Image 1: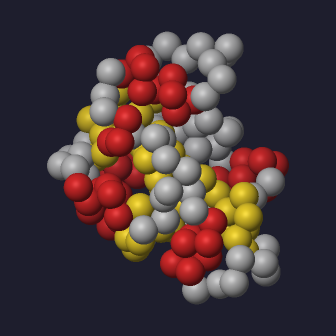
Image 2: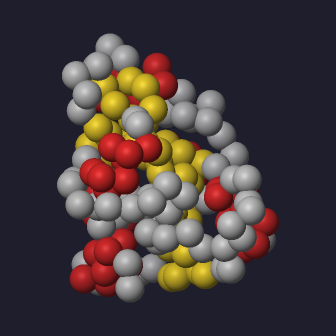
Length: 155
């Protein structure tokens, strides 16, 4: 059981786990989840970690079918500029490997922003903390568990 699954379970939210066999040759972890789970790609969300100009880390949760708008993310965080965080920092801070970073159960709680589009669905899918594992839950439960706010951060 990953830390992400433990957090969902401990907080007694309504969630479902979805597993698939991860292909180590897959070019895109997000696309692989979409292909293997046969779910609307707009409901599958990826977890991205950004660094502010003061090197503070923050989490952006956006649909796999879209990209993170760095300017919109900076605005949501009330900072001038953000950039994608270095892989080593992401892994050290979250406790997860790239391709399996979950917004739940991270070593350090980071400021989290979820794209507004998540509110359009009864449930969304996020990484369960390892490649090949997705957690289905409501965007409002995800926001509650991560103390996240919603903003338009995808393009």
